[in-house]
Image (cartoon, rainbow, N blue to C red; front, side):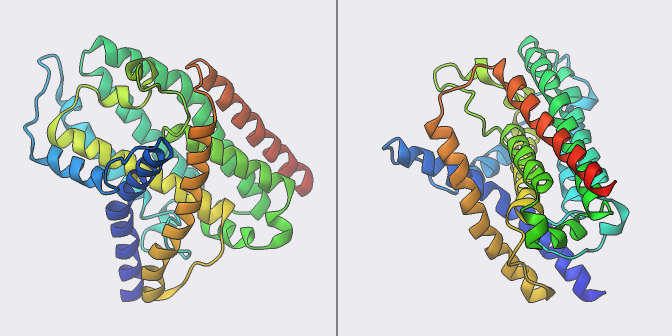
Length: 313
């Protein structure tokens, strides 16, 4: 019991403390590709600490939902880190309470709460951003749930740890349904974490999707929302790596859990390199093309689900 508790603590602390680092690394790489020195890879930490010390200003039109929901959103991502294999490859303390579908619903809950809290600010610009997020997220959440249904049919369970073990079997890893599910989930990760080449440096406001939802925040609530965004990126990306793309190499035990943080760092460098290539080599997308991108991801997830049904028939 003590070892399970320690493994749980290591995973949760790893998610909270390490998640901002990967955004800093990616921003640094982007600057280097553009022949700029760029900011430190630790800049996200500096930004968070600076915001935590700043005064919080609240619109006179805002309600208590606007003020307190950032704390709930941040807590939701912590709960997700307690139930899915983002660092440690075996069930931890609260894993039996939630399966893959439950994890997907928690992600959806956090996204829903961010839209609700944004609308409570009374800002017209934020309302526009909320409309964008809503028009895109229905396809993203459908893709997420469909992929997990496909995984459940393939493995005979909705337990993410069983899927992690299945993914290490070569014949399953190379199966077409698994490949389609992996591609769909990767496309979803690009959208959900803002890695799609949509925004232009000269017209940032016109390309805002998720950032528009936190536009009216300042101080500690803004710090928590940004930190929660980094955690969301890390949680989804780690599921992609551990359950779909690179399921090998994870260690067991308390010492193994500490080693897993370093192993995940290596895996994440690979994932960030792919995101860097996509961001720097593709032309900027028009905003309405995001729906086309998500529609392709959804179709791939449906194809994966259909192939899973056929194979299990």
